Amino acid sequence: MKPVLLIDFGSTYTKVTAVDVDAPRLLGTANSYTTVQTDINDGLADALDKLEQTTGRLVFCEKYAASSAAGGLRMLASGLVPELTAEAAKTASLGAGAKVLKTYAFKLTEDDADEIKRLNPDIFLLVGGTDGGNTDCITHNARVLAEIGGSYPVILAGNRNAARECERILEGREVHITENVMPKFGTLNIEPTQKEIREVFLNRIVQAKGMTKASELISGIMMPTPSAVMAAMKLLAEGTKRQNGIGDLVAVDVGGATTDIYSVAEGLPDDPRTSLKGLPEPYIKRTVEGDIGMRYSIHGIVDAAGIEKIAEIAGLPEERTSEIIEMFAANTDMLPNDDETQRVDEALASMAVRTAVTRHAGRLEEVFGIGGLKLVQTGKNLLNVDKFIVTGGSLIHTEHTGRIASYGFYDEEDETSLKPKHAEVLVDRKYIIAAMGLLSEHYPDAALTIMKEELVKDGTCSK
Amino acid sequence: MEKKTLVIGVIGADVHAVGNQILYHAFSDAGFNVVNLGVMVSQEEFINAAIETNADAIIVSSLYGQGELDCRGLREKCDEAGLEGILLYVGGNIVIGKQPFDEVEKRFKAMGFDRSFPPGTAPEVDIAALKEDLHIED
Image (cartoon, rainbow over all chains, first blue to last red; front, side):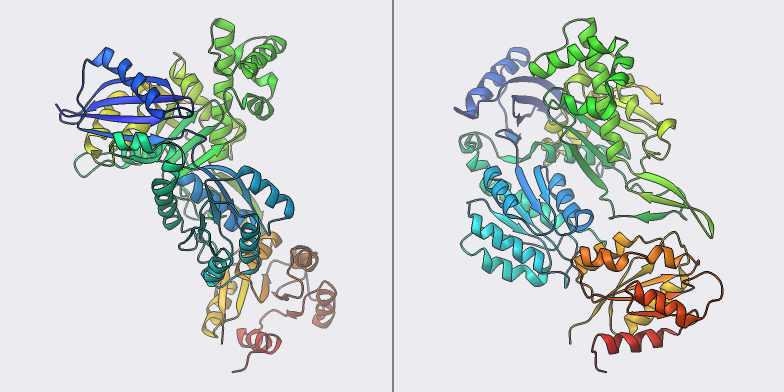
């Protein structure tokens, strides 16, 4: 037996997962409160105690950790046009596992400067202009950042013709220059930026967040938690040299404050005559809905879906539904404790899934022109994706996971939205996905075997 | 000399792709840096592309007769977006029916288009005009 420990320092919980990589299997999971304020190792030690109560004493050969503690990897980004380089900057940051506090477009204003100063991010991503294109905006924004001051690093990934000038403007600051996120108009080149973000995270952020002590103990804090989830989903979809993956997939993580959606699929149109609009889509895409969450962002779900709809799904009067929602909002660590609260929680989760998957998926619209009907697709086509992975407390601690998940499927009432038509629902009951992403760095085959074993089928659904 | 950047595309709900493709090749061969937005391009897309690429000119094609409607307000939106003074060209079957082209040209001039080109204009004519307006010497 070769036990490996995977740790996820979350904002609330420190989750530990023990696996045997020799005969790949899950040995156990446990969690405890994250103790970033005092010593992060206290929470970890507590979680390990709990783990060993079920597994017996374990001697770990290797230990790896992901972290979203202390607010996660907090980033700000600025680009030029909202739909173009600003969008590319956001996509790049989210794909690197960051929590994007805000994305600015065009020239930063004095108000923006005040806000940036107040938010004091872990990293600022400065982009704008295609190579050889606009330089005014990015140099202006570099000057604003220079004036604000601050100790966070700046990653420059804009017009290469302005890179050195921006670097000079930001003299004295930690600046990392990398390739433009949009070197040519309409192309997306986000990997170099993501690599840079990850390096800055490893070299700098981990120390700054009081985790140095932990990193002495473990083989390394390797990535922000959302990156680990992305790595796991990529592995699960693609497989390894020795094992097949399960193919294209959509994954949904409904949290207390945000809902994250991941898709691993090219997402191209079914009909090759369809024209594509907007930026090209990354093969692995992560979107985060900051207004959709089960507790801190509960009102965002109500705003998006309407109280009538939530009450209808819960099968309760609107007034009672509202009362329960207010209870959840006021007590963010409250779990459903009776039939009514359970029904409202599930209705909210259903609408969180529907809203977030709809925003993530692309659209196919019909345009009438002189040549007759023409199809135009924006975003990713996920109609044919047939695996739907779900995780997050409200979805894994209920018997009705399949029913909740089905709200993320194609809906005839919103027929232009390209959500999966028929998909098998796989549930992360033991909350291991992030851990498997960490494990996949060195033991991809073990991680894949364990995921295939532990992600439980919950029927094939279609809406 | 630094290459001048042109943003080209077919405006509105128009799907005629061939002429625009010919322009793309002709302009590229003539030494321009061409950002080709393809067909069914909205005014906003022309403007956004011109901003990011710091374009020197926007060249709008229209072949389905609705060009006059589709082009209306483009100059004002350019001004609004900080692209004051950017060169605007339009060409193709830009109006419905047979109308004297000098009148058509006048109307498009009033809409802020620096030059308009009638159906069947050879790309060489546009290129010569671009070189003149952008002060490019051969």
